Amino acid sequence: MADDNQRLIIFDTTLRDGEQSPGASMNLSEKLEIARALEELGVDVIEAGFPIASPGDFEAVQAVAQEVRAPIICGLARCNAADIDRAWEALKHAARPRIHVFLATSAIHREFKLHMAKDEIVRRAIEGVRRAKSYCDDVEFSPEDAARTELDFLAEVVEKAIEAGATTVNIPDTVGYAVPEQYAAAIRHLKQHVRNIDDAVISVHCHNDLGLAVANSLAALKEGARQVECTINGIGERAGNCALEEIVMAVKTRGDYFGITTPVHTKRLCPTSRLVSHVTGLQVQRNKAIVGQNAFAHEAGIHQDGMLKNRNTYEIMRPEDVGLPNTELVLGKHSGRHALKDRVRSLGYHLDEAQFERVFETFKVLADRKKTIYDADIEALAEAQVHDGPSLWTLESFHTSDGTGTLAMGAVCLAHVDGRKVQDAACGDGPVDAVFKTIERITGICVQLNDFHVRSVSSGEDAQGEARVEVEYNGRVQRGHAVSTDIIEASAQAFLQAINRLAFKQRHARLNPQTEAVTVS
Image (cartoon, rainbow, N blue to C red):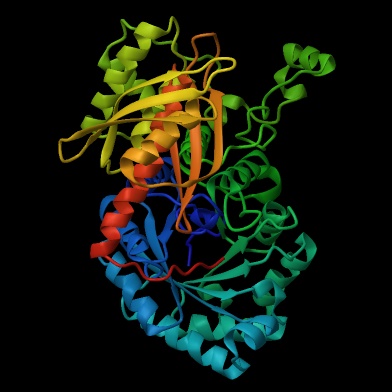
């Protein structure tokens, strides 16, 4: 139990529940990059994954547990021996491990999913908590779909879980069904009817199906909940989770109302938001609270006049407090490694020396092409390193031809990791399509292109173009991302990145067959 009842525990589940957002899967290096950013942000708990879901999830939880030392590292498990044992195997090297066990309790889940009676639910919950407790002292229990569970039964399960050793009890609104007054009443009921409730921290985990995840979480805080489970940018299953940045700034901005504190370093909110957006490919809407592009923008004349006289007339927070600088640092071809490294880090990226050297090399090339390099350009270069994974093929060169009344043609030369170089050409519906088809011919992987878009990452005629693709192959979806001042080159690199990931996974799967993934909200 927390010593200070006015201290809010921030439990970040971006790497677990956030990754369940469709299209947001991350590779190991991306998860580690985000975990390091969360540590720098100052979150209390990182839920790193669901170790039994797949070998990849296990590997990610294990790596985060070994490399990220300040926060509590948490792994999710169902209330069964295999899940809990697997979670501990992944977490055992963590400086501060937590096992998070869950079991559904609502009537609809009992009848249609679990086929269990109430007494069986209670027994399984007790057994699960006790087994987790045999491995580590820090154990969290979640009655899944708690918001639709009968309050008296919910109180019974929570009380038994605490008796069995749970130090945190989470009350999830798994399907985003609750409204603030009802959800607050559920927390109040537990405070009044669970005799040992003060022996554990009450946590809340709200989904945003009705757009109420943050409102429900804040309502629970007023009733005594002291841990909020949330994600960067509110990403997650279906409509997403409670947004970390909104919870943190609501508590900080309205300290007069909530009377609770959090040690989160708010100036890291925007850099961390950008990192997660880049890694997952999920763009933040312009009018998103706290971290959206328009969050601190004022266009109306009356607002602008008020801001010029006193910024408090129309701003309840300062942009600097959430990590938005007043001015951008402009770098050029004469800038050195130190200045670039400092700016890369300030933008939220943690690159090793090899990654940074590749960024520096591409930065110098870009500086020869562009008069001015903006923060967005630097982010794009750093992001390319975060996204980089094993590459069987690299782009050596390409050539395209197109014009009115002619058939587009693309010629490509790819280098394989084994040292050979392969050239081929194809026609297509435009130069980008021709290049894509040629890459497919060379690699032997023909995919369905689900999504493709290109945008400018900064201003000016010489701006870099950012290309993103999503492809599907044998039911497996993969994404690619690249930047270049040449949008056809960016498109080719993004497409090749997706092909590389598919090719690598094909080869890896032959030696490491994956288990069926399991997901939970």
